[in-house]
Length: 349
Image (cartoon, rainbow, N blue to C red; front, side, top):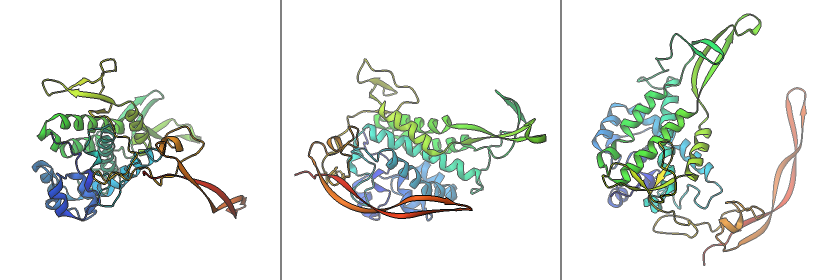
């Protein structure tokens, strides 16, 4: 079983020799190449992925550039957790820690798959790609709960983005077809479904005195933050599974838990505690992380510092205060000095 999540270790790597010697990279490595995506220089792509890469260089550039958005969203969602979607060095963005088939890996596959769909659909709608544009199926008239409307504007072509994601992102897992591949495919699909979930109808009214007697509408993706929030909820409720005897699906690890739906995230292994620095995995641990002394949640000093305690230091900072609006159209503030207590977790001894 190949336990390495595709390309996690390689987002910012510059040591190609180390990459190809240590692990099996894949499409996530495109983020290192930025706008200079070169299909033959991405380690670990299967033939189908390399073929699609050569045929669609501008699509690959868009996806590579868009990776920063889903990584940023991952870091936002886990900013107060022991695992906060960062690693020790630029060349190991997530670290070999994610060799595990944990729920964090499940989230990474889902958010990255969702990110590809979102990035590609947005690039199509904005006219950045010659191969796609607005959704061509949204023509003529239709109806919703408010009555009839005419399709107009530019509907995000999410179905095109989903099809490309299935063909490109899933290609490696479809070739391997082992237990880990089944897990990755399931979580990839859950990520794509999350983007679809937040499509909404936006309309512009036409008519005398704003009567809205005629509406022109289009389907638009919601802000990616909603997708991130949704997948974070799915992460919390992720279902631990085993591969069934046929190797075609999952059975429950805990029989009293629910059977996973297509919207759920699934994982095989329990997560590590992420408390201490692990040089082999590339994980920093929580030593030196800022914590909230009064919180009982994941960001609280007791939880985040793993019971090791924390150090408190007094620091001064300048903030804007006493802001007033002046007609028209300025907001003028004063610079105020304040002293705060900064709590940071003690390191492992």
